[in-house]
Each structure stands twice: as structure tokens, then as C-alpha cells.
Length: 157
Image (cartoon, rainbow, N blue to C red):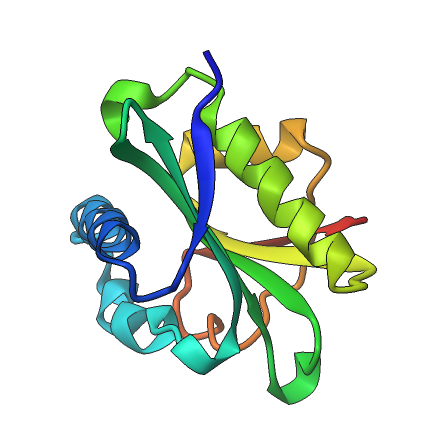
């Protein structure tokens, strides 16, 4: 059964809770990596840059999240998906595919020629997921350069 996807405000309590879970999961995963000291500075999201935030629900329970933000600096105007996260009990159910499709659709609606993502080298399931969906490696872009385990990908839309 497909999840119910809802566009919500970036500050919506369900979106905030899911993002917090995502960050905590990443903090645990990379706790032993010395580069993790730079994680906080590279992981912040300015709410003013958010184009869309999507929360997935099953039976009115929030189970997944993704958002799309507009970059600045050398990549000004490009769009990056952030915080694609599905709660562990729902992984493998297709929710991540639904969220990714919604975010890619939002990027197309914004007129983007491509979408960018950032992940880390220990996120093996994410790396397989993005490869399966046509994302290819690109150079690490700001603000992720100081985090040595960073990997960045892009997909032409």
C-alpha cells in the first residue's frame, strides 16, 4: 500500500521529528570518524532555502521525510535533496522511492535541469538506492568538503 505523501512546512512537527531522527542516526553511524567534528557545520539547513518538504504517512503515522533546497555560492540556483529518511520499520516498503519521486517532481516543477544529493561512505543502502535511481558521482560540493567521508551525486532531470 502506497504511503500518503503530504507537503508540509519545513517547521512542521512531524518533519522536525523525522529530521532529528535522521541526524541522530548519522551521528551514531559516523561517531568513530574523526571527520565527524565537521558534520554539524555542513549539515545545517537554512529554512529560507527550502523549496518543498514532504512527509510520508501510513495510517496517519509519519514514516518518512525529504526536502528540497536551493543552493547558493558556486552552485547558486541548483537544487539539493536533503534528509531523505524512512523510519527503520518501513524500510524496504517503497516509501523512499515515493519520496524521491515527489522530490524529483518538485525539482522539475522548479525548472531544474538536475538534482544533487550528499551522503556518506558508510551509508551503503543509500548508495545502492541512489545508483539504482540513476544518480552518478559528482565532485563534493560546498559545504561538504571538510567532511572527508562525503560523497555527492547528481541526476539529470
